[in-house]
Length: 166
Length: 103
Image 1 (tube, rainbow over the protein chains, first blue to last red):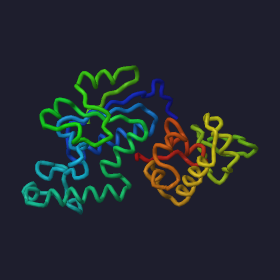
Image 2: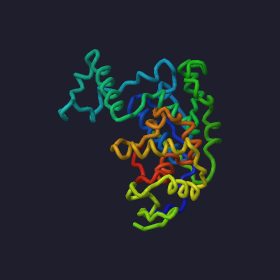
Image 3: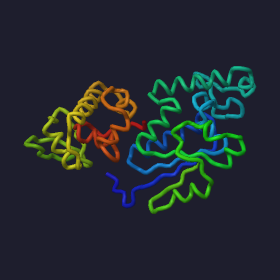
Image 4: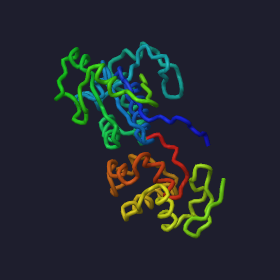
C-alpha cells in the first residue's frame, strides 16, 4: 500500500469549456473526489456554464471539426469535412452519450446531483454569466452561488488543497 | 496478505484491510469491522451491505449510482450511513475487495 503522508483534503475544479469531454472530465474528477471524502468545489465559467444551465445541460455536444482524436467506428480516420455536414455533430454526440450510458455514466444533471448529494459544491462565474446574459434562474437549482473569481479563491484556501483546471 | 480473527472467525485480508475471500464474512464479522471504522450498523446498513455483496457476487460494478438506484437508500443517505468515503468504507465492512469504480 502506498502511504500518503499528506492526503488531499480539498479539491477545487475549474471548468471553462462546454464540450461533452470537457464537462465529463470535470464531473468524473469532481465526483471521484467526493467519493473519496475530499471536500470538493467546482467552478463553471465561460462555455462551461452550459453544463449547469437548465436549457443546455443534457444536450452537450462534442466537436467533430478540428478534433484530431475523433475516429469513426472501427478506428478509421474521421475527415474534418465530414464533421461539417449537418447532423453529423449531433449524431456523434448522441453516440457518445449512448456509450457513456452503457458504462453507467449518468447524464449531466444526475451527475451533478450525485456530487451535491455527497456534499460537493457547484458555483457559477459572475463574469461569464454577465457576458452570456444569464441569470441565476437560468441555472440548475443545485448551484450553490454565483461568484467572482476572488470569492471562489477565498473558498479554495487551506493546506492540502489542489486547484485543477479541466 | 494477512490473517485476522474477527468476531471469532478467521478471515484473510489484504494490506488495507479488505477481504480477499468474501465467503468468510458473516453479519457478526461486519458488525465488528464497522465498529473499528466507528460505525454502528443498523438494519439499513445491513441492507446496503447485502446489496453490495450480491452485486459483487454477480460481477456487477460497484458504483454509487447503483446504490442510489437500489431502492434501499438515496445517494445522500448512503453518504450519511458511511460518512467520508462511503463506497470504500461499505466495501470494507461488507467483506468484499476494494472497489475500483470511478463513478
